[in-house]
Structures are given as structure tokens and as C-alpha cells.
Length: 427
Image (cartoon, rainbow, N blue to C red):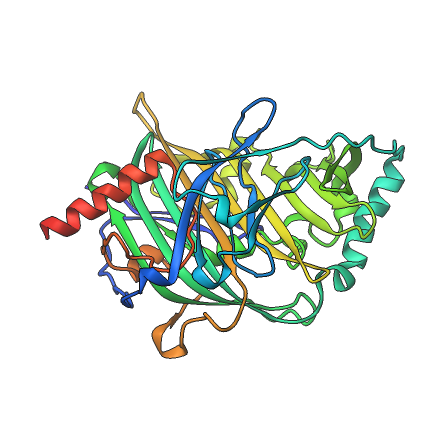
């Protein structure tokens, strides 16, 4: 018999883990349109460090003079679809700590392109600051948001993926193309998301004693945007809760970047966050951030995620990591990519072995022009408590995504996608 268990992120983002006694009926949604593949060309490849040959994870790949973009995946691989009218343009590849690389699209092959980035060799000016100065830098980040990020709503197209794994086996995979109304931080208007198309693969039989689904979906990814939602991470009294320090500087292309580290004060008992903010030295704009939840006290950390659970079951996270990237466009920085990875364990009383689960979400903005945004009648507005696996059908087609850019799947996800395709053929 499968047991109810409801888990969720309290305070930071709205990602909930719903462990249900039985599967809910699925409200499937899929708008399928025929796409003329002759209107664009697709290019695949890898982004590597020119010296070490290591993969560069989450590097930005943008078509020059446009808002068309994608990122490299956790294995350094990328895929990008470019309209034929832009084939004489160039790709701009950027990564923190490296010099931008510009590659002519006409020089690219359809597959197996290897793009090497050179580490920045510029000698950076030494910056010496004390703890007070580090706090002032953080205050400057918040004070300069309007100048650095603007105050206009942005219409975006995004690709969203969420996965749930039991140990190494994928239990659930869901992917979607979204229309996003990204609202400015001033005024507090919530971001709005509509579903255009999507697909999934689920196999809840592998969950043994519990069933769970992921609630919050792409809203959870948007809530990682610490520029718009700083209080979700730092609360309103960050200086009372966190210690700030400035680490070694780096750069992106020719711009100096400050690395501002933060961690909760040792006198604070509640699990908070620790990580690094990468800040443009001139403008004090956050251009990237990586941070994690302190899970040393597994009981208190578990309470951040648990809504209710059956008697005799302990649930606690063992690792919680976040990533957020921004991209500059016309002198302003905009939300570009975010990711969350959560690993947790379920311990049943009187059982020797526990079970480990990992869930990941990621959202990449692939365009922010209005002309290619789907028509309103072809989308379904989502709410912040959405369960994406209930919103998309188990569809598969070699050309399912058409002209839309997606994050190149990792090898393990590719195997799950092939399972989707085999299942569709057999149905």
C-alpha cells in the first residue's frame, strides 16, 4: 500500500514534492503544430576549456544581433536552432572567467562542433575590503536593481524540464515550452506563465511505498531569481542573518566581476543558505549566483520541506543546490536560466535501509521577442501550485519541439526520452 507524504520548499521557492497514495487523474494538455523544419537549421556541439578540455557547464550561447539563445547542459553539450535568415550571423559563447568567443554560423557543422573558450588572462586589480565593505556591496546590489535590470515587463519564451529519480532510475520526466510574462521587481506583480506544449514520461511503479509528484513547476525556477525575490533567500534582515566576504575576483569577457560569498552567522540556528554572488564591479549587478541550503541539522532542514507525513517516516534533504544566471541585453541584465537540485532520503521506522531520491528543475529563456510568442488561445495559464506532469500528455515525435530551442538533454535523460518514444510507438 502506498502512503501519503507531502513535501515542499518553505520560504525560498514554491517547489513542492507531493508523495501521494494514488495517482491523480491527469488533465492532459498538448498543442501540436506542424513545423516547417526547412525554415531553420540546427547545430549541436560542446563548449570546452581550451587548456584543460573540461566541459563548461551552463555556458551561454546567443545568436548575435538577436535574442535567440540557449545554454550548454551539465555535460557541456548544446543544441541551437537558428532561422535561415540569420545564417550569416555569428554565435557568441560566454562563460564566467573566460573571454567571449565569436563563431561564424556558416563555419558550423550540423553536429559535433567543439567550441573552445580561453580563460581570461587579464591581471585584475586587487580589491581589499573588510566585512562592512562586503555588506555595503550587497546593499549596493539591491539599491541598483532599477538601473541594472530595468522596470519593464518582458515577454519570454522558455524551455522547462523537471525530473525525479529514485537512486539512478528516472521515475518522472517532464518537458515544456512556456510563454512567460516576466514582471519587474518594482510593484511586486507576480510573474505569469502559460503552457504552450510539452511531453512527459512517468513510471510511478518504481516508487515502492510512496508516490510523489512535483508541485510548483516553472514557478519554482522563477522564484530562484534573487534579484526580483531577494527576501526568499536573504529575508529582510540579511545583515543580521548572514556574514558576507569578498573572495578572489574573476571576469566575464573584459568586465571585472566581484565574488561575494555569504553564509549564515554561527549564532543562527535555523537552516539558511550559503553560496556566492558574482557581481559586475562597475554596476553592482548580479550576473550569476550559486548557493545551497545548510542541511547539517537534518531534522530542522527536513521541516523546511515537510507539510505532512505518515507516522514512522523521517524525511530529510542531504543536498539542496541552486543556480541562477542573468544575460545582458541592450545595457540591462535579464533573467536567463535557473536550476534547483534536491536530494533527500526517506527513512521508515523499523526498516534497515533508507531510500534516496533526487529531483531537478531547470528553466532556460530561449527567446524574449514577442513575434514568436504563441497565440493566447494556444496556451494554458498555469498557477503556482501546478503539477506539470498532470498538464502534459505522454507524446513523442522526432520533431516534437519544432523550431523551439531546448536544453540539450544529458545522456541519462536521453535514455528516458527514448523510452517516451518507444512507449508512444507501442500505444
